[in-house]
Image 1 (cartoon, protein in one colour):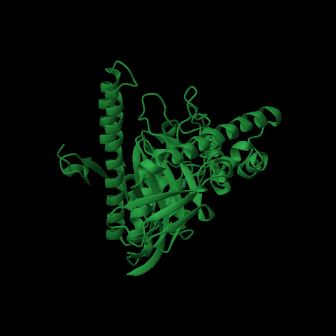
Image 2: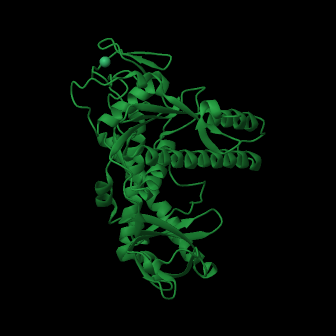
Image 3: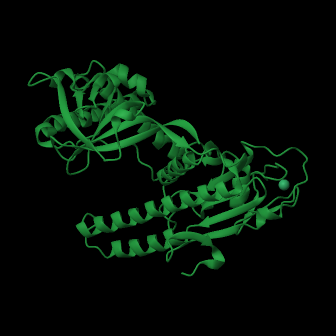
Length: 424
Ligand SMILES: [Zn+2]
């Protein structure tokens, strides 16, 4: 066992909710108003000089704005940082060919503002773990009436003790839809296992096979989307029978679908980490989908949200990647993200890169060295090689690239099993 410092977020309820909810409401509304002011400034700057301001520029424009002083300066900064991140994320998706991605919206419903999350950084909160209380700073505009801070009495889960963590870096006040809760972002020292080995595995995430894995030793695995596709078909059919897409029934169906997806992601990430332990893998290399995907033509099969395909967006892959990293960390395995640039175009055996590679029925065929590979496995192997390149000129047998073992989610056992053993 080794010790390692990691980030954990702990949720806590607020015991004196009645006393503090009005104050928290006014901060939550203030955060939405500042967001909207920032959003409007972005529009203005864009129409005048064709550029969307970054986080620092926005802060410079707005720090003398009246709304900026509704919150503690660090809290206001965080709102503008989030806005800049949202714009960046939208840009990234547009570059990846996601034409349905929308720029960040205004936070307004008619004349009402929603309660946005308010973040308090080091100078904005004071924690008292003896009495389980935390003082949250208000902005100077909201201080006048009563006091300059909100005193929340919190309650964490019984197994969490904030007095034992290394540091509490941030406190977030989050509106759940019914009430406010607090999220403590902490640095925590945990016991992790020694890495199971030094080998690497490459993971290519996509919408045909959710994951394709290429192991350094020369074998490969596929995780098709069988059950997510069945779910999607089932839920979209049920949703189309709803009278109103905002109805309670539709909301319930959407929640159920998303819970099943979360369960699938948890089970898959756990399974992959276990496979890595079994195979002596110390590093998982995952393609980073947020960067530019490919130059030139887009790979049809990987286009996001194409009609008739599963409605999986890049955030689903981000979410899966962070689950995988979280679980891998406990077993001493590192997860590295690398750019996916050219990984679907290049031959993982000879490195030959072609504009028009031959991808037919999921196969990658190299004209140069005549390698035939499963296209997703070829991508995964290229991703793996970005961290652990193969020695040049090494004569490796590459038959495994075309013969992945396939694992399916077995609804009866709730686990992944090799295709031939799945009963449902
Ligand atoms: Zn080749």
